[in-house]
Image 1 (spheres, one colour):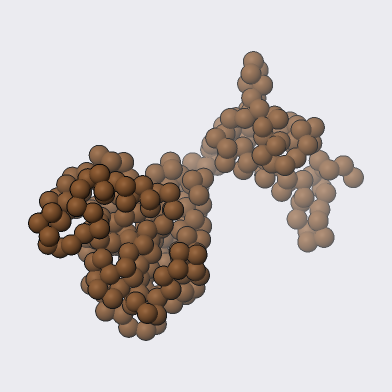
Image 2 (cartoon, rainbow, N blue to C red):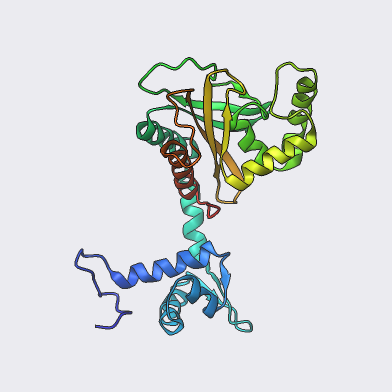
Length: 267
């Protein structure tokens, strides 16, 4: 039986050719949705001749289009339609809340979900660890840009003009020395944000609350914009503050998974 037959099945009953074709479609989407055959087959780690056979079927079904002049492949109307239907059914808060519980159960630390509100990074969900932790970060709390891991993530991944009004206010207070912050000048603040952007995760050690450490990771939506931040925190001494430790890696992993569920390829 040929590799392109829709009746080719694995020993687990799945249709192998369908999986290969869908993988090719996902690869096209993940790489901007506009590729030559050679580039697409290279990204998919597939021989060009084999990729072409699958693309013929995908074009016929309307999931892929080929430009007659450039011969480049792009996402077709059926792929766009399926994507729009999926986005329309998406409930970000439900997905994010489920992600919070998965993260809490994985690391047994208090976890927060924050979105950007009128006054800054605002806590909208909180799930506590099995052990009590006294943290003044309740639902509705606004977390500072320069004294919280959550704030650092928003400063790092939001457009500058979005965070600038809040940052200006915080810097003015920081220069007065109350409360202390991780930066007191705009230049230092953006250097701080750039470091978080490069690492992909924010971390603070007692910057907002003495004796409390925290990691926070960005979550992106289907447009590639920052949608929210997932944060975990715990007491110094028992909290695993290693940047390559299981706590930090769990936050990154769950945040990336949530980004994928929200339709983002920016992971």
